[in-house]
Image (cartoon, rainbow, N blue to C red; front, side):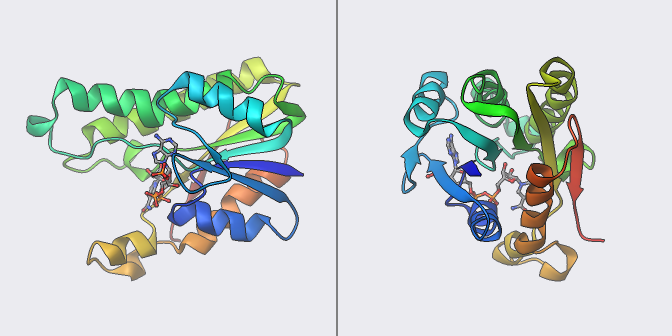
Length: 199
Ligand SMILES: NC(=O)c1ccc[n+]([C@@H]2O[C@H](COP(=O)([O-])OP(=O)(O)OC[C@H]3O[C@@H](n4cnc5c(N)ncnc54)[C@H](OP(=O)(O)O)[C@@H]3O)[C@@H](O)[C@H]2O)c1
């Protein structure tokens, strides 16, 4: 199967590519350094990416950003950036997928643990992650029979914790998060939020 992987150059994207490549042809996308370039915050760029890539059996998105900062420090622009980037970028990936994802194919988005387990500084990120999960539940109803749509919610990733000087043992390894994205492609669920957290 051809799989379009948005955010292919990042921590999770790199592991997902490694996990999928033995079985699937992976086409990587990101703003720079990938097979095809895309800026999720720009809908025209998403349309151009789909046109450049041709039909795929699955789309996986581990790209997009949201601003992490205490509410006192979050300006209007920070909320607008977060909504336009990781939230609407992923929503638009689904909205623009028609005709580019094969019938019965799948789109798998990314939220994160901060949707359900907020912390100080996560207000904008928590809106975005919860929004992606709500969108997926609703969109799956309307896309029934056309394409499946799911979201993976990673817990803190071990490599990220290590890069922040925190205890990596509290996190899930990126290689294990990647296996959850593979399940979303290979299995038949739709409208689901798949948790990828340390057990
Ligand atoms: N790591 C964690 O602990 C963790 C935990 C929970 C949730 N998550 C979520 O998982 C996702 C991936 O995390 P990660 O740690 O792998 O991130 P990462 O290492 O920072 O990688 C992000 C990837 O997305 C691309 N990207 C960023 N902005 C983009 C845009 N506007 N348009 C297109 N591509 C864009 C980046 O490439 P370019 O910069 O070249 O575009 C890169 O390929 C994120 O949504 C993150 O919030 C991560």
